[in-house]
Structure formats: structure tokens, C-alpha cells
Length: 434
Image (cartoon, rainbow, N blue to C red):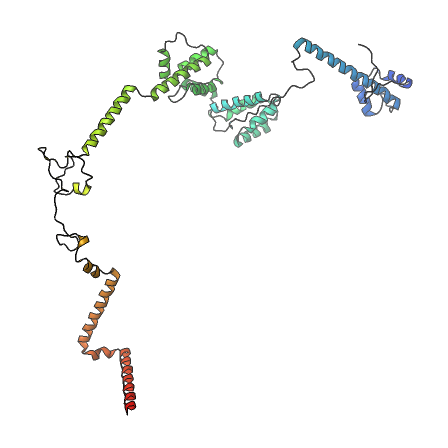
């Protein structure tokens, strides 16, 4: 490596003077960190303040150090490109940060089941995988996980950290502690095995959904080979699905869990399609039966002598009528036709006067009846007035002639006024003629 002359901060070539060269010998044995420390303190190793020559000598020494450091770093990068390829990450150049935000995490509560807890833990693992550069430390993971807990769970964790402050940065211990929030946490392992033994596919549950449920339980069980998981999944399928797989004629079943789930899903969808569409024979039979039933009901509503119009329900149920609900109208027992009641000539009767030969609309006494009909209130008033008049007559008969009616002081005064007016008028006439 050829020796190059040092440069200053502006990039120009730096040529030390003779006095500076004499001072460089003092700082040749100092490292870069020691030189920076001397500059920060403003004094040399002996405690004497730095002069301008000392500063120039230190500057020349720092320039040499930086140039050497850059050349060494470039040589290292060249070796990595040659060994690993040009596409690999070069030291000193940060890689591209990937940040995939995964917020579909359900909050953990005190009433959560162990399945909800396993799903919560799996969702958190997806959050860490989406931004590995962000969640490299355990304390950051704990902060994010606590934000996905409800208020009661956060209060319990805060109380636990106050007693055990050293556990605030241990994510593995934090996950173990969150199991205490789950229902049946005292016998957690026993509950997991019980749920796994009872797990079977329901009638309205697809194999894909059942696999997701079964996988959430298996996460808390010891790991087993993929072939064992496939056989366990097959043993817990619905009876109809297992029966259809057996009669399908397959020589061998898939030895992987994914293949077994795909096979069960195809069979399950085929069974659903078969149950949804009825058989052709049954469909035709039902259709023909419905047609026959509709034709019979249509024939029962017709007369044997043709359609005669609708018959009122009142006429059919009238006492003494020849029409029965169970027989055809207009037909005798011997099969001959008889006249319909509407075709027979009936005598007209007026509902108003009760006379024969006309109806109420053409009644000759219609005008008289209209005049005689009064409004209820007017008729009532007239009845009251007639009653009062009759009572006055009775009182007059008891007391005598019209003179008895003048017993009222008001009537008597009116009568006197009338007499005076007549007397005055007669006197005026007599004076005029004289």
C-alpha cells in the first residue's frame, strides 16, 4: 500500500512544517481514541495546555488514522463481495427495514379460554415476524403484548412487576405468567389434553376450520411427526366424511397433515353438494302429485253443468238450502240436473214497508218515510217539549181557566202593558175623528 500525504478537513493535501514534524513524534504512539480525548481535554498527557503546533500535529495524526480506517473497511467489503456475491449485504450499509403491521390481535381477558390464549400468543409471534428489527429486545415485545390485554390483565401485570421488577425484560417469563390469567390455569396441561381428546369435527364445520381449531390445541402439546398429526386428524373427522373416504377406493391416504386436510375438504364439499340437490325421481314424483292435487281441487270448485259464477257463503250455509258443503251444487242423487236457485223466479219483498211486488228502492212510500224520519236529537227535543206541554195542561186543569196561567208575575205585567197600549191607541183615534 503506497504512502499518501495527509489531507485536511477540506480535502486538500496537508503538508506539515518542520516544527509540526518535530511535534508529531510526541503523538505517534497515541491511538485515535487517545488523540480525541486529548483534544476534548485541551491538555497533553503531562497536563500542559496544547499549543497551535500540538493541535496541527494531532490533526495530521487523526487524518492518517481516518484514511487508514477507510481503506481497511473498503478492503473488508471487497473480500465479502468476492466470497458471497455482490447481492449480499455489505457491512456498514444498513439493510432495508421491513415493517408489516399486523393488528389483528384479540385482547386477552380474564375470561379467555386456553384456545384464546394460544391464538393470542400465535398472533403476537406474527407481529414480531412482521418487524424483526423493531422487536429485537424483550422489553419492547412485552410492551406490545401488554397493549393487547384488557384493563384488568394490565393491572395484574403492573402489580406483579412492582413486586418483581427484574421480570419486566424477560419475554419468556411474561408468557408463562400470562397463563395464570386463563381459565382453568391451575390444571392447564390436563385441560389441554381433555380438550384434545374431546375434539371432533361437527356436522356444520368444514375440515379447514376444524384443522385450525385442532392446531390451536396442538401448539401446547409435545411436537410429533407430521404423519402422526395426519392420522390423528383423520381419526377425529366426521363419520360421514370418514365413510366416504373409505368407499372412495383410495389405496393410500396422505401422510402429511396438509394433504389429509385437503382430501377431507374435497369429500366434505362433495357431500354438501349431494345433500343440497334432491334425486330426480323424488322431484318428479312430488311434482306430479302436486299437479294431481291442484287439478282435483279445481274440478271440485266447478259445476257439472259449467261454471255458474260465485256463490255467496251466506246462500250456501242458509238453513233449508239444497246446497251441501260436500256435494256438487245443482245435481240430484240420480245425476239429473235441477234448476239453480238463482234461475228460479222468486217473489220480491220490500224491506221498508213489507209490501210484496217491489223492492225498497222502488217503494211508493219512500217519500213519506223520508219525511217521517227525523234526526234523533230533534226528535228527542220534540218529545221533551210535548211532555212539558202536557204537564202545563194538567196544572191548568187543576187551577182553572186561562186566568190561572197568569199567576206568573212576569206574564201578568206583560198583559197589563198590552192593555195600556190598546187603551192609548183607542183614545188617540177617538180624538182624531172628533
